[in-house]
Image (cartoon, rainbow, N blue to C red):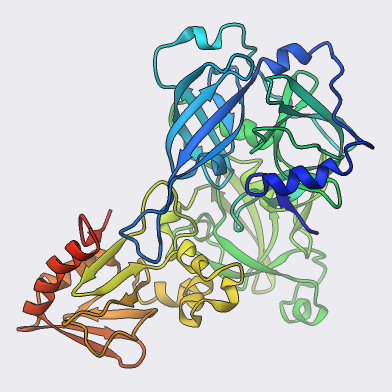
Length: 503
């Protein structure tokens, strides 16, 4: 399916949907609740500046985003996390009057793609007359939902779309699927449509994230996920959505099931990986186990279960949608020919706890430069500098670390430290071609993270620094005095404030 993301392809969406607008134009007829819903929608203006992962001491060019947010009953404005990523300035605007006020991001969850903005200065009159929305978590297949937009003149308009399917899909990040609504209907683009509020009557039912103009299918963050997000905030301490921390393969192959001696067991998935210190690991789940049930729900051989309202869903919704951090959940596994009952206490593995950070926003990549050798910690955003086909184009060794972190965690590594490039300086002559190699030791010190590199360069082996790497030429030798001299020249030549970012 060809999917056009509203957030990054506004102009494409405008031209594609305009062609079909005569057959299914947005309804602008007055509805009983239309005025109150329209008064709940605010424009959100964002100035953002991301980081340069190839030259980590630099930031990219600043840019702007303009979208919509909805005022909630807690007095804050709900938007997508994607919209506010790497934001340097946030502004809220009344669509009808154009009145503006600075905003401040109070909480952001990039995995669930949700964020809240609050007014950052005392100006209570800005929200006078605005209606504060509550959630409706009841939408299901067959319901008709309103997709709201705001025209240039400030008029709020909506398009009625039936809810076609409830499923599990990715919102923003590729590794964190959540409950998703799919709507059917043609949308005509209006100004400021980075993300669109979706309503059921006069209550919020979700946030529309993307629109496929060919199939006329919209993808929506489902209200139960928003509800989970907001309830987590009620105690003032946001924890996030739980994760299980394991990978599995389907157990549909008859020979595999015979090998596992599953016998009369009809479902279950085969556990292939368990992350250290994860929910699964702490519960006692092991590689080779067959997961039969979680939270009282039988899991079929494809990793699905029967939801009481939505029908068959991926089991990830039990973990992320139906549980909270700290909650205990019964787990049934099959191991060594017999079933076992375990208890999983739900936890979340933060991105920085992964060997390879799955995402990185609002802060720059960690780096350390010595004599022209640029050290970094491997992140998924770094691999994405190789383009849309990064999974095929990025260096194989780095891709292997991403997909097989257990190989490196067994060595005691906390992060994968690698040389991203070697700048040509008198200290690095002959080594300029070295790049994308994983670092094992520096000056005899085993490297587990980037801080180890900085510490090791503070203790050279006599007159030289020795860098041991896993691939040819297997070691780099830098003159210690020349390296120190080059460091000052590099700062001047590249206008660097510092040669390192370690926090």
